[in-house]
Image (tube, rainbow over all chains, first blue to last red; front, side):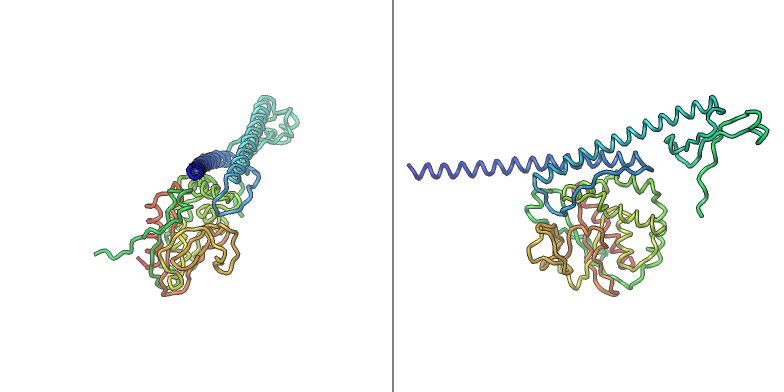
Length: 160
Length: 212
């Protein structure tokens, strides 16, 4: 009887071990998929930010090797933090661009009051190297008469 | 009759295959005729140099094969922002160098295969490596090139010894450069990259090495 119990007990432990192994593998697989998905989202944010560079925290490198469940969890959590930071940086940049667009609209309506303002295309989120600024029509005469206009400078400087 | 060598499948150790069932490794033995690349290879490299602008180099990470490499890097504990994937490293290198100037025959063949397929191919001197090749975790006495390795590092191994870590982070691949030698080409299909893409990369590299 005692032998049967012992045998039964040993068998139960083996089954439990196997169940744990299956559970852990499933958990690791789930974490790996989450890591892959987070990398795609972070990559999309980095591409959206171009030509600006997103400064994201570096994950510690301890590979290439199989990661433990704890390491995968830590990595997943770090990547969630990185993604949050990336999205916050993009949102802040969009706010800045919106403010620049509003300033340009005011500048176009009333150039004389914005004579020292310069807004680059990059600040507006537009490609190219042009800069919006206020200048006088007809040079000194226009300056004396208050004939102001908004001009967009030509493109990027030639490579030297 | 077609005597073109065909890529052979290698093996993946059980504990790694259990973790990454899609992971594959393939190899191909190729002749290496001469030390300098054929003009055709140099021309193709030059034409590929104009394929990528700065924006495209950044957006590369969203393409299927580079994205698969990035995910796999992450899952193995490598940050691809700190240690870019092979294709990203090659494209940034090309932007910094202003082109793909010819180097030696092996390096050019590996670069061509990488730029054409986004799949990294590494080369070993066939006199020092004995296929078939496989992937396993490092053992305590594994010191490829005399280097100390962290325990459990994933390695490319042949039937006798470890050849190199699975990814040479920030280093050039261990290439055979001697003329007239046989070269063992090895490619890894990370999860999400088809075995066909790896076979294509190996075939391109072999053709460039053998003058095909």
